[in-house]
Length: 206
Image (cartoon, rainbow, N blue to C red; front, side, top):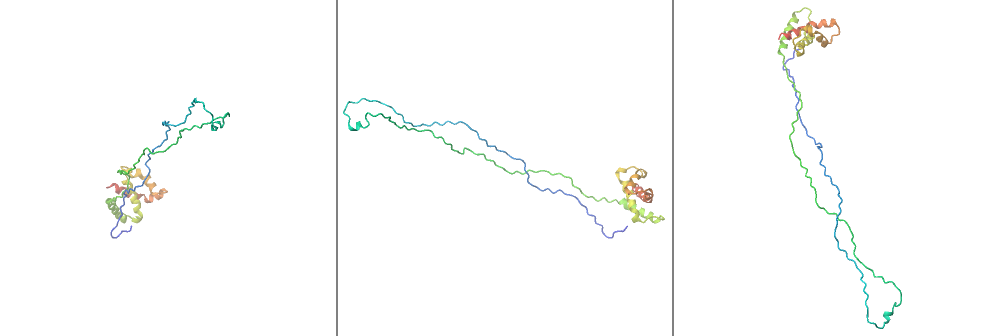
């Protein structure tokens, strides 16, 4: 494993809520105008002409030429009569109005959502366990290099710290460890089993 020189910087991220505003339809107010028909009576005085016939006796006198015009001829005398009749027309007038005053109000609404935040969990115990494991590798004949062995060591260490396997022995969690390592056969598992067990055991020594 290559040791980094100088400062090692790990960025820490977190999410924060940003709330924008947009207009949306909240509903509507309906003002319905209907037409109602009703009978209305308006009194009006109408003029008309009437004929009153009055026959009068006069003192006998000799007829003049003017009197003889049309004398002894049958005829019908027509006297036109005039009068007034009611002529109805309708006038539209404004009698009132409805005023709709639309105002804007502001209200405070609390927006709640879930945000994620990264936290740095420094496992100082792992560094100590790794250092001790590295010393053991140096004294073990035929031991693999730390760069090749540490991933398996870390697998066992992480499994031992997993709350799902709390209180369980290595033998009880071995099937899960083998599956997690992606080993297809028994011989492959036996090649890495010791390093996985080392990590698991040293994690339980905390």
